Image 1: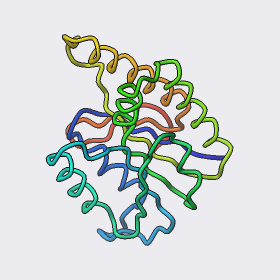
Image 2 (image 1 turned 135 degrees about the vertical axis):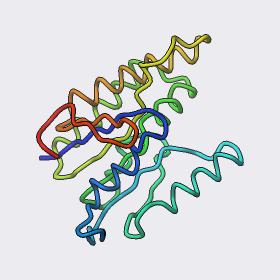
Image 3 (image 1 turned 90 degrees about the horizontal axis):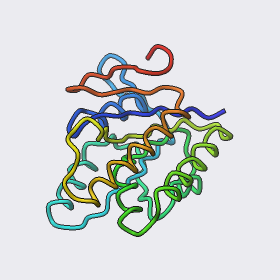
Image 4 (image 1 turned 60 degrees about the vertical axis):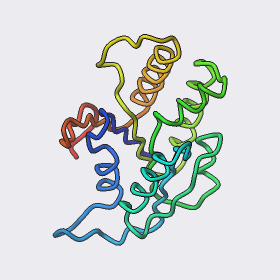
Length: 180
């Protein structure tokens, strides 16, 4: 049976670093030689600044991680051989789907289908996403739609997740599930 770990937090809260730590724990300061770890990236380089961010992010990953880019569907990762996967991040994935004209219902249905697939596989999946509901109501419609769709997607993932962490200033707070 698959395991889903969901990691939520604000920008620069330490979500990705924590996901890497959970996927590849350290013993006495040294990363264990976990095999078959997949890093499923959802960001696409849209400008020079984003390219630099992506490259920096790639360099921060352990050398034993294999990276694949999610082109269209989250379930694309099942074409790969892995034991553990990090999807980083749901925020960018949802944004891309919304900008490409997908409705909230289709986006959430796709995510739900993916989560159901995980439960039927012997895989550990860590999903990283931004918590966007704590801020002000955005001024423009697209930003409000994005916040609403991501909030709904996050709630959907949280329902399926075995564990949910909220990152605050680099500190993981377990809000659903057993002990770390």
